[in-house]
Amino acid sequence: MRARTVLPAVAMTAVSMVLTLAVVVMWLGTAMPWPVALVVGLGIDGGWLATLAYERRLAAQGDHNRAVTAVGWSFGIIAAGVLVAHALTAEETTGAWLAVAWLPVAAKALWLVHGLWERTALTPNALGAIQGIQQEARDEAAVARARLRAEATTEETRLAAVTQAGARVARVQAKTAQTLSRAWSTLEEARNGQDTGRALTSVTHHVAPNVTPRWELPVWGPTEPVAPALDAAPALTDASLDAVVDEIRHSEIPALSYREMAARFRAAGHSASEVRLRAAWKRVAV
Image (cartoon, rainbow, N blue to C red; front, side, top):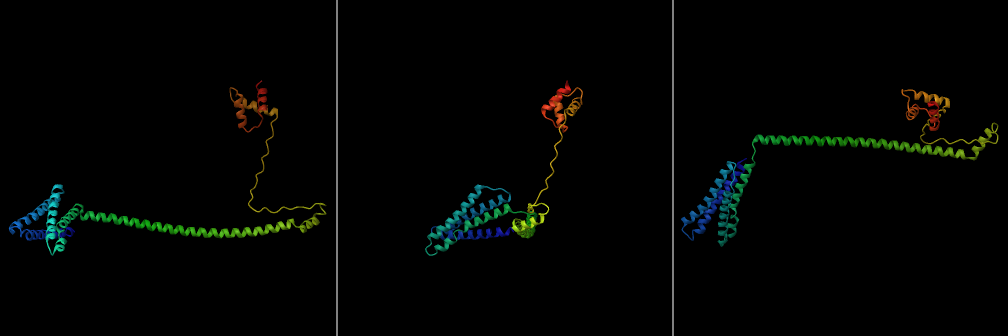
């Protein structure tokens, strides 16, 4: 995996250094002796390579120096500037030289990508653990989706069954209501008809002359039984009231006060007006 990033960077670096050296020698060789031009080209390439080596050493130690990085990029920009200047001074091959002028900067960028890969690289054990966690999460998500789909299908089936049953019940209720309505209308017509009244009169004439019975229509709808009203408790006589008051008053020692006696009298379920109760108290307390 490491070769996928380091080999392109090494190849681009070699091509860039050779191209820069060749351009410097060809371009400056016409204005100065070629050994001097060679030294200039080697200086540019050497500075670029030296800063790159120092950056790689720092990266291997887990360190980073911004000054060294800035110097390395400066050498790369200088090399690219030399190529651009040579391309602009060339008369016939300007476009071709400009097309390769970006190689030093590209080589520097590839080494930057390789450094980022090294800082984020993980061991095979860590990668296996991450893949296992991701696979477990995918499995759980798939199971959850399947469970949700199954629950949705079940709920849809249940709703369809309930809806169909409700529709059948509604149809039966509507049909029953229609039948009852027709029967009730028939009964009402029979009840209000003149022939019905004469027939009933002829039947009851011997029992109750001049009386036409009137029968009621059946009740259409639910009915609720009415509970029989409770009979009111008979009122206590004065003697009984006096006896109850005296018994409650002397139920404790010392004797209860009127307020306590009245409260216990009501709580026992007895009924008497306030006037009668107070009169009984006075008669007993004398």
